[in-house]
Image (cartoon, rainbow, N blue to C red):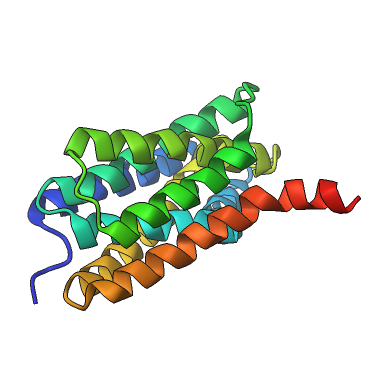
Length: 210
């Protein structure tokens, strides 16, 4: 079996992880001995795992990349997602609210699920733009939800590391899907897309029932 990550992919994702730890290292000072920053790092680290929509999207990015793309294209979308996730979180922490965050997150599940189901081989720039565009809204949601008392640099560093972990898991899943019948990728993608439809229809259905 071919390795899940090419050398270029390892370098790209390692750069994101190092960026996260560098942010934590810069924040790890103060009279409290760093306890507050360590707590913030843990809060940020677990945050990507606390919402089914975020977990599904990050896994789907990795799975689609590994199942459908090759070479540099296989890591471009995960790296773009991680970078734009950080950008969205920074915007939210700065007080800039993006419109329609929750619908955009739901739409990301629908789009990423369809890409995975079809194993669409988009050009590298297009795939990165799609992943990065949706990641901006995921990041805005994370940035708004992180406690204001948390150390920003440590919390965001932890969030980046947690995101990369999910992408790596998704890449592993995608590599497995690539070696099996296309039915498996279609099923996995359909489940992610259905989850997106559920989140999109949820508010509308609630309004109809009220």
